[in-house]
Amino acid sequence: MAQVFRAAHMVRDLEPEDIRVLTGIELGMRRFEFVPMDQISYYSRILKSETEYRLNKLHKLGILQRNSQLGYVGYQLISESYDILALNTLTQQEIIIAVGDLIGRGKESDVYIAKLPNGKECALKIHRIGQTSFRQIRKLRNYIKNRRHISWLYVSRLSAESEYAALQKISQLKINTPVPYGQNRHMVVMSLIEGKLISTIPELENPEDILNQILNQIETLYLQGKMIHCDLGEFNIIITPDQKVQIIDWPQWESSDHPNAISYLTRDLSNINFFFRKNYHVDFDLDDFLFHLLE
Image (cartoon, rainbow, N blue to C red; front, side, top):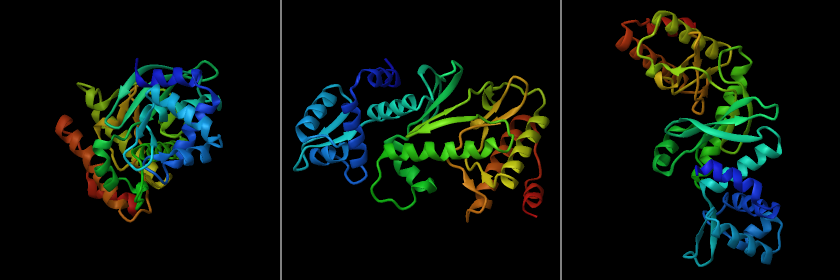
């Protein structure tokens, strides 16, 4: 059974006190890598004896990591327990009512079909910033800034919050991008994306038109939304069945007033130019486009 499905079953089966203990550990992880039991009891507002019982139960279920080599016994959330907390909140807030099949997997996220309370299908994107790439992400992600103690689960949360904020801004610009429905911790709920990644399409019907659509969206995002994607390339551009462009994957976006904004924008544009020149012998004058945007 996939982790997210097991987490969904846990949401149904766990008692409120179990969820409170998990939340207490989450709060304690702001200060501790492994949270002592007395701190978990304090944050969860549950007596120590009850906290100890719940911790043993949750550890036996395999959704907590325990460390007794610290001079005390400490507990840490794992990705599955974080899934439980996020799904519990999204269902409590009636943002989604069910989770379905996996429909996409990237380097730093999984995307599942989910169901809204009105029965309509949507996408549930789960940000999973792995520990293997954590050092590199610390260098690249501005929203981590100079935090000294930070868990990789919290980095996933920051990534989801950043993407959700971007989708909210973009939705006001009337651009063809996923509609945000809700977000909690490392999960973002959005409208389903219909289409294929441009990198997987053997031949575009009209590459010049697609390129112009991409440039028009970049221009609108920069001038009206004051936004730069910062990771734009052929792996996050969708072509819909009616040949419309949809730009996805927004956790790394930056504001146009960022000190490195021009560098980020130039990199995005260079990536697009390289892809179209290599595959379709179509390109644009990058310097002229930048001059037009910045004049």
